[in-house]
Length: 273
Image (cartoon, rainbow, N blue to C red):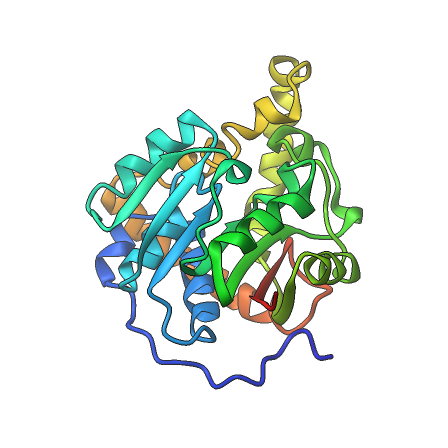
């Protein structure tokens, strides 16, 4: 199976509004571009579940594309951030909850799990819980950190319990009721531009977090570093996007051509049972 390509005909989707160049930083916008790319292979999605939403960036981009849905996270800090970002979208419910505690509804067209699975001890149970909230034939858009060779102090700081290899992730999805549709590498911009700085900061602050559990570190993982790169004022955000975004997007395009490049795996999978 060719994991890096899909036989599906991509759908046409609206472009993101240009004013996002002054609202979000380049790394966040790269995430939005990746989400939009994968969403093109999902037939007519309307409702989404953002599982462990962090500060709500994925939900924000899905709302920009006309979808409604629900964003959940167990962290009160993350929910506070997400509520502010998603306030302009009344069609999105923001809820503090553990993903495994949500009663299966089976009414979502697509679920997004972006850099979440590596934080959860029982990752198979989390995938099964998400599957129960998808319609039969619904889709999961998954992003996880890749390659055990990249394990570092940053993973401890972020609350990561693991990184994934290709075969391991494909088999996990198959066991939990999904069929892989599209599988690519991504977040190359993060790896080259931010990862070295992130590891340095983690080492410098190790005395302040070394005794904390992975669960405690996870509570702020989705908002801790990302917020530092998305709270610039509008002129600075625009400057960073004009100067860095084309380079970051070029890196993403390169990484998408090979599973051996990148910091994360991005997967589109379909519920088959």
